[in-house]
Each structure stands twice: as C-alpha cells, then as structure tokens.
Length: 197
Image (cartoon, rainbow, N blue to C red; front, side, top):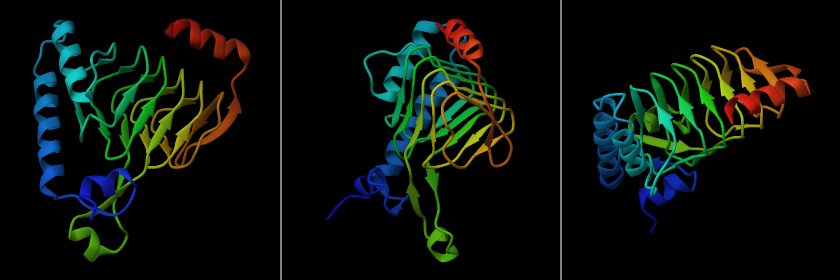
C-alpha cells in the first residue's frame, strides 16, 4: 500500500490532508515565514534558510520576500536563479528550473491541480504534474505557469500570460493562454545570456 506522498510524487490522485503531507507543508511554511521575516540584507542567513527549505547543502538562489511554496524539497533551482517579490510555487511535483532564470513580481508556478468532479475536490483529492523550465528563461510580472508544462531554453514570457501548454525554446510568448508570437533572434538570445552570466 503506497503512501499519499508516494501517490503525489507519482502524479496520481492523492489525499492532500494526509498527516505526513500536512506536516511537511507546515515545515515549509515555517521556513518560508523565517525567510520572509529575515532582513533582505542578511544574505547568508536567507541563503541558509532557502537551502534548508529545498533540502540542499547550499544554493545561490536569490528570492525576494514574500515567497511561499508547498514543500520546498521538490524545487530544483539552477545557478543564478532570481525571483522578485510575491512569488508562489506550489511544488507538489518536481519543479526543475535551469540556470540564469528570472521571475518578475507576482509569478505563480503551480504543479498542483484538483479533479473537476466537485465531490472528490471537496474531499481533498488532488494531483500534481511536474514542471520543467529551461535555461535563461524570463517570466514577466504576474505570469502563471500551470501543471505539467515545459518551457524551453531562452524563452521570454510576457507579463500576465498564462502558460497552459509547452513553449518552444528561443521564443517570445504572450497571452492567455501563452503562445509564441515570434522567435528570438540570435542577438537577443546572446544578449540575454550575457546579461544573466
């Protein structure tokens, strides 16, 4: 018999109010609270809290407060990750982010979802789908990334967009739902990579 956590990580329907998952979410909330109440200039202390939250030895991620996530241990952040104020990440499934990625204020990355059937949803049934974000990606203000999507390398997503399906590498994407409107030219890609290195 598999645990609810094992079901969650396998992308199956699980019971969100399971005691183990509730305790792990509470632990993440305590660490987010500690991060959000640590002075922005206390960089070493903030970095240590983030590393503890993600279950890694160290991280160079820079995340502005306030920041909230569900578990923390499902976050795999590449080098030079930056998230501006008011970022929320629902990491009920793995969320893998490449190197040199920038998140503008108000970005939501949500691996969690609920059944359409209301009785099941009200009972606390939930499922999650992994999200992958490539290298050198910039998500504009108030972008929402939905469960199960992959965003390719060098993608720029305009403010307010909702990413509900995969976005190809080297594109500028806008809208609800987000769609590529053009490919980025090499000079734009090179300038973006140079600026974030």
